[in-house]
Image (tube, rainbow over all chains, first blue to last red; front, side, top):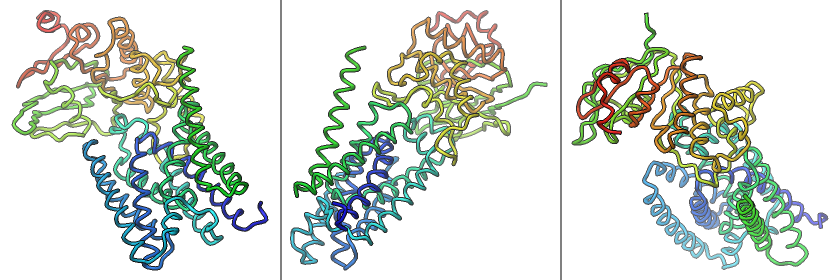
Length: 267
Length: 227
């Protein structure tokens, strides 16, 4: 299997994405942002289509769109919860529309849209892997640097108000890192299913671990398991890798919920 | 000479069309246990937020002595049953700053120390979400203590607790005040607790206030007014 270049690239990229997504996912869950993540991936779809339209790579188009919009949405973070959700819905609708427009203007066929929305493992070149690695390392380093303040702000927002940790700046830095994460991960699972790696492993880990570091380690483990097994099954069957990854992650989540149910019954 | 940590001078604050605090002056000295009492909505939490610098007064000022560290236990916190952190990890959240993610040995010792101080060592590894109301309040207290504050502000920390649990929590606070000299600002609408623990009181009333040593409150015997 590894004698094929594209499988090597897929495994390298998948491993990086699983590690970063598992770690970031813990904060996505703590900050209650799965919906925001989903919206960023739709914005990413528009960005990728825009990239194709003006002759960039889809990844670069995604990076520009998601970064700019994450800063804009970051400004909304102070808004009333219910309004924030509505604004996010409006933005996501607008961007999916824009994505379709750019794709039609660039005269690409519909398989291009499918690649962006559902990912394309085979299409990843060594060049892409290098760019993804650079972005992933950047995200991990920033995460390490702001870890303690982000942890306080995410897991105890009320308490963090008095801790002088510049919550607005932390929030915007986190959103930008999330934008990078979404753009990179969309290359393998597709922009529609990005939340599979960003929310499910962390949501599952929450039921087994009681410190943030353990939760991260488990989330990374679950994400890696899904990606590695998913790629292998995709290689064996020629079915879409995205299908396997999302099924595996959903199964892990289901088992976690069941475990939690049994545990609370037995008390 | 007394060491004044907080000096509130002629403080007034109004929300649009709604005066909350007016002409309030008092001092908090090192070692004090001040009880702030008043009905719901009278402006107790507003006063706390002004002291914390989260709200700006319409007039007057709050002077906080240089270098004074404030530990704060907020009134509301949404910790649901699925909250994933253990009590010891929650307590350590207040170790902020641009440092490595994992705790140093010194920090771990401090976590152990404050958890011991509030009496939660037997459940330090249990998720906070599964703790009882009283245990949660103790965990919040431990978190507020972790950075060695000079002043501890408790905002309605006993509001949702049964009488015995209230006493248990306030006994811990009382001990910290008497043995470590920790200054306490205890905000509550529970007149009985204010009679029992603080040594000074500040009673916020509509548009006015009174304050003094707690004996004055005992002598006036105002307990019946709202308990």
